[in-house]
Amino acid sequence: MTLNLEGFLLPTLDHLGVSSIPDDVDAKKIASEWFSQFATFLEAIDVDGALNLFDTESYWRDILALTWNFRTFVGANSIKQFLKDRLSISRPKAFKLRDEFLGLQQPYPDLIWISFFFDFEVGDTGIASGIGRLVPQADGSWKANCIFTNLEDLKGFPEKVGHLRNQEPNHGSWEALRRREAAFEDKGPIALIVGGGQGGLEIAARLKMLDVPALVVEKNARIGDSWRNRYKALCLHDPVWYDHMPYLPFPPNWPAYSPAAKLAGWLEHYAEAMELNVWTSCEVIKAVRDEANDSWSVTVQFSDGKQRDFEGIKHLILATGLNGNQPNVPSYPGMDSFRGQILHSSQHNLASDHIGKKVVVIGACTSGHDIASDYYLNGIDVTMYQRSSTYIMSIKAGWEVLFSNLYAEGTLPTDLADRVNASFPLGFMMNGFAQRATEAIAEKDSNMLDGLRKRGFKLNTGINGTGFGMLAWSKASGYYLDVGASQMIIDGKIKLKNDSLLQSFTETGLKFEDGSEIPADVVVFATGFGDARNLIRKLCGDDVANKCSPVWGLNEEGEILGSWKYMGIPGLWYAMGNLAMDRFHSKHLALQIKAMEENVFGPRYSRVG
Image (cartoon, rainbow, N blue to C red; front, side):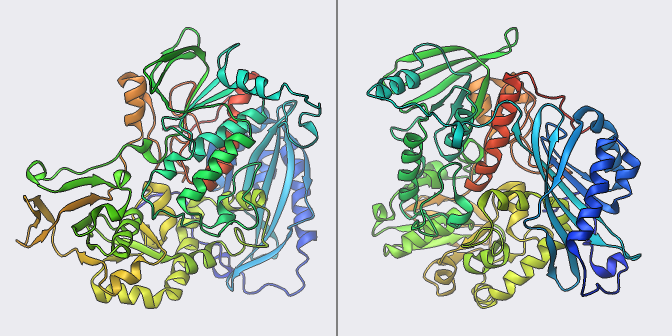
């Protein structure tokens, strides 16, 4: 798989025509002088003046602040058109350079920039922040390689946190008020959220802090069951510093890698502590767009068959997990005649359910490895069938390279780390930066990778050598972040089959195109999930689904499709991502909704073509 993202070669010293950097670079003086001109030109709507401060090979990424969209502008011409179109509408002003975190950074010997944070206002509407990186020029000056701008808050509608929290004592009425609020006895919600996992809870918390009434509808009996009911061996492969939730971070003794059952308990606690309005054991069975009233009519059905109809829902938000949590199960001849059990990974629970049986796991990415290792650790004969090559990195080496200065003990506060992370456009990452990180990780993992190759495991280095990141953002699959299963494969404890394509099922196992067969009592498809729009189709009908953009994947600017942004139908939103992305972008989704409800939204600046 290849990606055609707009971007340039890394701004290395050689590429910039710079022979060396003086030892006495005054980063604060350079940044201050550059920023003063930048602010002056933007406030004066002087596009040409602003553009002279940028290297010709540069980027500007904006999330909502100046576009009410998620946009990345690549190159001087694109940035020029963006500024011409938007400065007079957005009217940025009150620019202020921050003193903290301003300095010279040198991630590699040949790559150096001055990084800084800043704040500004967006007309009478918004409060925003920004990050800039200046690179040296052959003439001794410094120009922008990248600017990132991000909407932080809406003027006049701050989050009700800190000194804006409820200051009144409550003597005995709190429980009754909460019950009435959660039941929506007086009026319906403005936003209805389908799914009570971390994505649904985080957007509900964001909306509550902005005073937007929201209801979370969860089909399971308890909040957290979406994790609690998965296979028991499930554990997060992302570290705790990356996974904090908004307003209520994990406690300081929380393990670095959360077991699924522990995370499930935390989600239940989060919903209670944040006073979120959650209905469990129910699901949305129908949502009809009311064009005349710019709203949705939504039917919620409880497990006992009772229903509640809502009219006038302004925002329908789907937060049902990866690709709508709709399992993707390939079809093979002979499946109907197979005498064993066929499961999708989402249906797998306990490996011990299959003691004494032969198991084949189809799929060699994260779930495939987790499930196969679970079977081995329970003494079960397990074979992994690898259909195509996989990117592998150990979490130790991977996070050491990728997160050591961002999401780790004693580094940046999480909110700042999120903004730094977002400030690197994927077009920049795709054109050399991610490849360097991938090579560094592979060097640290060389023994493990050599062992896998000797075993015959098929490896790749990600899309264009970029490792797991682009795989995650483009298709949310194709990789395994190793927590131990790779060594089991190397040692032969997890058997491996990948030398021929699967042809069919037999009554007693699997048959391959080269004539070989594997006996199996249980086959587990660890083959991911389907198109998220299938859930939209199920709830909202074909007409709505056909008008929606894809959910997940990347456009040519390197922006994720569909999630947290306008997807083609007014008032229909999707919130899909890992804990870190949900934390960061839930605020963006909530700000869009609040701005629409207060009539201060837009106009949106969309791609043409």
